[in-house]
Length: 181
Image (tube, rainbow, N blue to C red):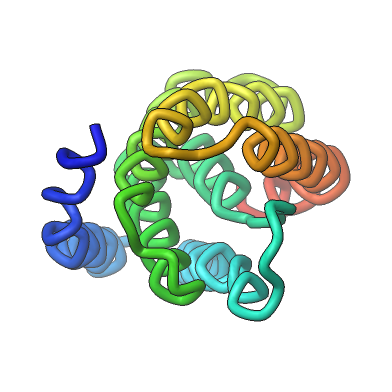
C-alpha cells in the first residue's frame, strides 16, 4: 500500500491542475458571480485551514476541507464538489508541508465524500455533514494505519476532527448553505 501511495505522489500536481482546469471551465461557462465568489472562498478557507500544522505539531485536527466539499457537492453538484475536494486537499497538504504518501488516502476519502454528498443532496446539511465526516474517517483511518499510523495518534486525530466538524456543520453549515442556495 505504501509503495502504491508513494508511486502516485508524482501525479498530485497533475491532479491539481486537472481539478483547477475543471473549476475554471465551470466558472467560464455561465456560472454567476455569487457562485464564483462562494466556491473560491470555500476553496481558500479549506486550503488554508491546515496552515496551523506548520507551527503546531499535534494529532489534533481542525480543517474545513470536508465542510467545503460537502457544501459544494450538495449545493452545486458532483463536478464542482470534486474540484473543490481535490484542489483544497492537495493545496492544504502543500501549505501544511504534508504532501506525502498519505495524501492519496485523503484524496480517496474526500472523493467518496463528494460523490455521496451529491447523491444525498436532499438531506439536511447538518445530518449530511456529520454522516459523511464519520464515513470519511471510516474509509481513511484503516488505510492510514496500513501506511504506518498509530492507533493513539489516529484516535485523537479522528476524534478531534469529528468533534470539530460536528460543531461546524451544526452551527455554520445551515447559514452558509442558505447563502449558497
